Length: 415
Image 1: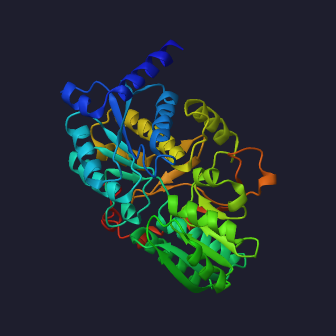
Image 2: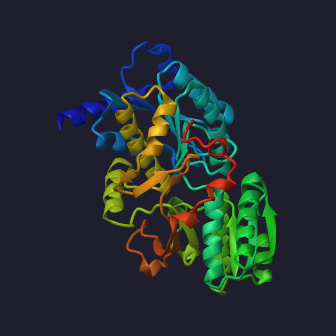
Image 3: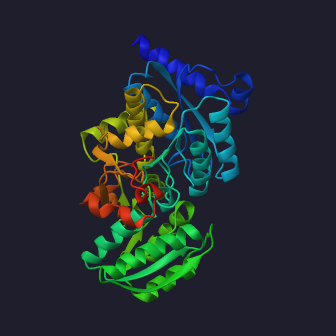
């Protein structure tokens, strides 16, 4: 108990130091005094609920569960806000690794930020664990011997539910798509999967980022008579589109509404009335088994009663596996060596179970298709999903040979 209290105090002190002051108060030590893990996230913007402060909590829990030390050194958690700007994120990352002795950078919601930070981490030979960004480039042309990708990417989020729904009879599709690269890629990936599975795309309509009124868009989806209306958007756009789809009665009229990039906090925010029946893909849910429920209860006790999202669960698994690798190689300063050891070791924890990490940096763990419950089926605000199907791992991720990762083309594992 005393060791836990001392460790918790050290974590609180590390988190209490504003980042601007931390750099001014200390220089990078010649001899390492701690294994420092930086949670670089969106702390107050659109990703704050799905990652943000909750990701810091998840990292703290992982460090505590590992015993608070790795390779003989205390583990410290620091945090920073990248404000969804690649320049801010890369500047913070550079200061962390060059001045403040941060060994691993974790989380990184926002793909542009993750790609920019990846360059910093690779040049400094530290470690990057992407638990929130979704770009396929992280295991494709931008794969790195210093990085591992834990969160689902656009390929998985589009392909898995699209194939599943076509198999279940959803043969005609209509897309409501955010009009920027993220939305375009989601739509294209899903439409390709639908056609390969024997389905038909009847049409699509695009909307600007930050759209408040989806009435004209939903009327077009309704008029298409498509069996599946797929929402290729996220966060506020998804929430607004989904809420108004419920008001228009798309599900009651027999159309299935599919969110391609949805998190449990989105459903909790919306409530079950407008979202009931929606199909969601994810790699984790708090109510899957005893291990996930136990973790969720501990997390909620630290995070104002909120249950963890899949992205926050990714942080826990990533930090825990990272600390195992640091302990195994006897230090944390050689990022390539740590990542190579992470790839060589099976992943194994109570909330995801056993898995592996491919040569391209892709973490392989089960992917699930869920359906949102009706209000009368739910026992509480976070009891929102019914499991429809567990997807075999070999179907859940882009085939490694299709990604174009130089690490794979060169035949190396992390080299």
